[in-house]
Every structure is written in C-alpha cells, then in structure tokens.
Length: 120
Image 1 (cartoon, helix red, strand yellow):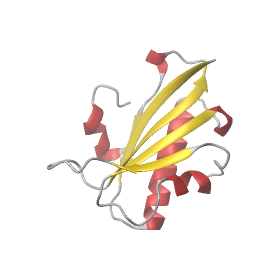
Image 2: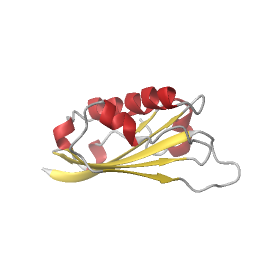
Image 3: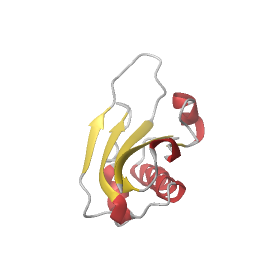
C-alpha cells in the first residue's frame, strides 16, 4: 500500500448548508467509488471553499457520510478576481494499491474546467 493524494472539486448552485452537504457528499462518494476506496482507506481530507461560501463547513458533509475517525480540516480558498464562484475543493490522502497514474481525480460539473489536465 502507498499513500496517494486525490483531488476533486464541485461548484455549488447556491450557498445553502443542505445543498453544500448534498454536493460535497456526492463529490466524496465519487472520489471513493472511482478509486475503489472505502472510508478505512482515508488518512485525511483538506477542504477549501471559495470566500462566497459561508453557510456551513464542507467537512460536515464527510461526517454526514459516516466519515468520523478521519482528520478533516477546512480552509478558505484564495480570493482571486475572475475565479470560479461557489467552489469546494478537496485534497484527500489515502492508502491504496493504485499507482499515481491510476488515481482518478474527480471534478464534477463545471469544475472540470479547473483542471483539464487531471479531471476524469
């Protein structure tokens, strides 16, 4: 087993706690499914949110999925002019047998435009 990093992002339609929970939950489930991972494979997850998202902590979605024994942290994304609004990004550290080229980074919806080089 190796420690690998998996990236992902989702853009929210609105800044509402329930909506954030649904969308971030969908992102986390997609990261796990596409990489053949379970909650036990998670080491830690960093969440960032653009400054226009204030309704909830993105990490609350992970707790809602039952990810309760994994260190999580939230931070604010840089406030850059012209950046895509209402985006939550993740950087998950995982234990996996996958090689670096086999990791499936997950950019849902419009966020695929953020990282065309690694979005699946």
